[in-house]
Length: 234
Length: 98
Image (cartoon, rainbow over the protein chains, first blue to last red):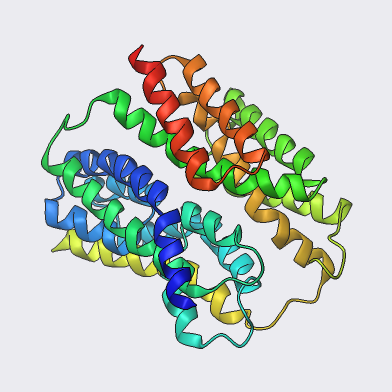
């Protein structure tokens, strides 16, 4: 039972692995510019697993800023993981052993969370472990490839692999929109607002990680007040 | 050495953010508005992250648009995650090579 779920997680995690491999190549290239060693870049990817956070860290490391600044910047940039962790806390069985919560938490990223929350019914932690088993090596190895070499893969292949990652996101939220009528307009409002935030130069001072947090909070709160989920489904 | 301390600070901060809600909220939250909020969060976040960033993937925007729209239609029609993801990936690869 857990075994099947674990292997399904691995299979469904393959697009994540491919996407991570590509994105983390760019992380590796950025790490070299910040004069990190390959070992440091690899350990960072293995222990952090956060694209926006790692990108932001290179400027801080290169400038030799205080450790406190690193702490604050990572906390702000990765705040969305806190929201995702809240959502996951309601997705698992309430009597799930505590150690599973400790292990699962390590794998909360945009993509792994997207897969986990898309599961029907309660979430089996082994599903997340399956995804993590393929995704974490993809992220770490991509970083190493990026820092140790340049131009291994042609640009068109990198672009296509990047598309696989977004295709996966879409495959998580669109089927749900079909089951729940109110989700479709919410998704389009989210995309529209995001495009607006991106296009208007007034918002240029807000980092992309921060934009995601702001839009998520405002739109989700608005939707929760206007369209509360019926008691039995919530 | 200093770089390893930076990495340690990063890793601990990021892990705490991820682990605290999951270990603190061990019962079902009963407040209806908060539950509704948590229900919507994942979909809003994913939609916001996908669009418009997806349009910047390829050098020619129309190719990214084709990938985006085909993934939306396939996913809405409940085609499996794996097929949607690798399908739009393959489509975009081919269109770039033509």
